[in-house]
Length: 166
Image (cartoon, rainbow, N blue to C red; front, side, top):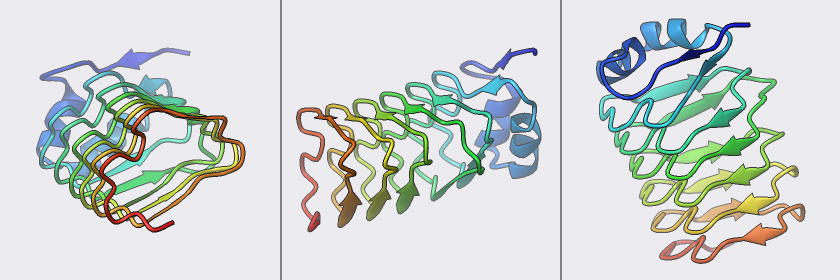
């Protein structure tokens, strides 16, 4: 198996994301072994939708940080995702809801920080860790289901979630 890493600026994946070219993004993400690494889509403000391939096991830190137009994240089924890294979706201010895949176990610090349009989060029964500030400043967050499997919720995980009711 070969691994392909796209890191930082001026990679085909980053350029396609900046131009919201979903066809090229999907083509590149269809290559088995590709990883969504640190800063892969960092500040791609034109990216509106992303489909995460089933073979992706981790969304690394800052992968989608600052993707302010990102509205929809689709995880292909069955998903191999086990963790969402720190700041992974930080400041994705257009994201409205997220259903975290079945086998995911951890959400890193600031992973969904300042996702101001986020209203609902569904977590799997496999979830163990919700790290510090994971959902802080999600001012529209109304509902989140925290399964009984969660053994650790970090400091300020839901700080300034002023709309949270349950």
